[in-house]
Length: 162
Image: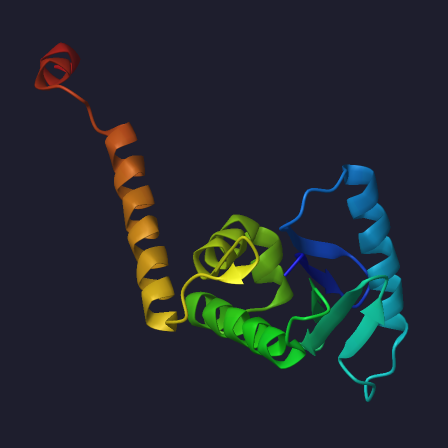
């Protein structure tokens, strides 16, 4: 996979993950072109299209979000659709029926879930259970870190405060 884009029906980019090195200018150009192309397609049209030297696989989910992936010519479109589906399942499990607002306000979690699932554009972990367990552990670690920040590091500090 070359990249994954999530965008709204209004064309607002919600998440982007690039697995190939491109300049910011090129990324913006690609994003603009693909958003316009995908949004212009009719709902009953095929979810695969050829674009430049890549294949684009996209899926509209939750009435307002499009998940769009670019793959190389030899890659399988159906597997890519399944990757999109699996990512959506992971988001659903984590957020409990994910919506666009979950992605907007918790984008760092959406990226983290994607990074636990895909690495370098390839599936890293096929087990939803393992991905969710890793996310749960990271959340727990983050909570412990927050507690450590607010609690005194040494007992001598406790004495000083008294």
